[in-house]
Each structure stands twice: as structure tokens, then as C-alpha cells.
Amino acid sequence: NTDAGACGKLVFFQPGAEIEATSYGKDGKERSKQYTKILSVTNAAGFTIAKVEGKDMEIGGEQKTTTVNYEYKCDGNKIYFDVASMFRTAEKEQDATFESSLIEYPINVKEGETLPDATGTMSSERDGKKMLMKFVYKDRKVEGKEEITTPAGTFNCFKISNSVEVEMDIPGMDEKTKEMMKQMKNNMKSTTTTWFAPNFGIVKMEMYMNGELQSRNEVTAVKQ
Image 1 (cartoon, rainbow, N blue to C red):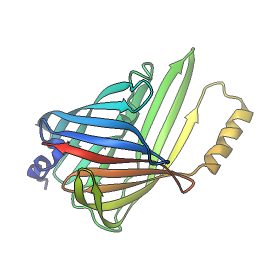
Image 2 (image 1 turned 180 degrees about the horizontal axis):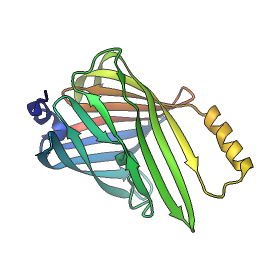
Image 3 (image 1 turned 120 degrees about the vertical axis):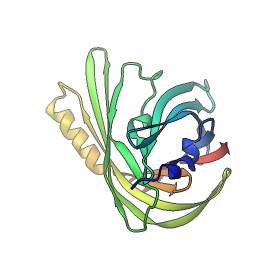
């Protein structure tokens, strides 16, 4: 029992909508800005599908801009984001390819709810050497409700926590290097906290390493 109308009310499924987000380092300084534009919205096989153009602009230095394209999906009950879109930086890694599952957020999310795991895989080749990195978003739990205020406004959000496991495979890697990487994995615990507004989408995200804040990203402007 899906409600396609619920999808059309979300800004990420409104043609022409533009969303600006800003990333900050652990020092609180701006690092980059992301500009998301909804190019078109179609319906197919029970899904509302938004084709999206995303631009990432570095702040300072060369102020390099990377443009990527991906999709958002909605079935009236859940919103689905492409995990691989987080890693698609084609201009930086022209030889990289991506595979992913969709990471889902229920529109009617509930406190205490556990959400499905999601995975993203990036493979690349450089100087004849192939490398495979797998990202697994695990233990996704809805912690509770929080009101979040950003330069774009105030949002009623659900706070969702999860761990992030990264596995790396480089063919020909010797046992000593494998053991060193295994120890690094055990010693570096990566987690993220996401604030999700059912009537909007992802409002804010924080990344932590061993409990220490590393970066923050939040919506800073919306144009509909």
C-alpha cells in the first residue's frame, strides 16, 4: 500500500528544486559545498524516481568542482538513497567503478526502530594495480526525535546512528600488510549520526572516528 503522493511532497522529488549543503571539518571550518539540483522526476514500477545532478565545490585552494549524477527513489513508504553517490567523484577517480545497495529511510520512521544495513563497493585500478573497498553501514538505529536548526531553517528530525565498516582488498598484498590493515580496522571505529526529517530528507550528518568528531555536513539553503 504505497502512497506516491507522499513522495511528491518531498523537496528531493520536486523538479527544479535546489538544495545547498555545507561540509565542515572537525575544527568547524567550512571545507566544501554541495549543490543538488533535481533535474526530472518520473514514475516507474511503483517508484517515484528523481534524477539528480550533484556538484561538490572545494573551499579554498583550487576550489575544484566535481559534478556527479545519481538517483533518489521513493515508493510512498520509504526514501532510497544510492550509497555509491557518496563516493562518485569521477573527475578525481576516473578509473573507479561503483556498486551499491540502496540505503533506505522510512517516511513513517519510529523511535527505537532498527533499519536495514547498506553496502557500497568501490573498485579502482591505478598503475596496473586493482583495489577494492567495501563500505558497510551497520547497526542503524533510530535513537529518538530532535529539532535541528540550520541556516536553511528548523526541522523536526529523527536521530539515526550507525557504525561504518571499511574492508580493503589489494591483490598481491603480503601477509604482514594484511595483518597491519586488520589491526588498523580493529583500532579505528567509524560511526555516523544522521538527522532525518520525514517531510524533507537528510538534514545533517556527523562522522566520528573512535568517538571523536571528524566532519559535519548540513543543509544550508533550499530553493523550490
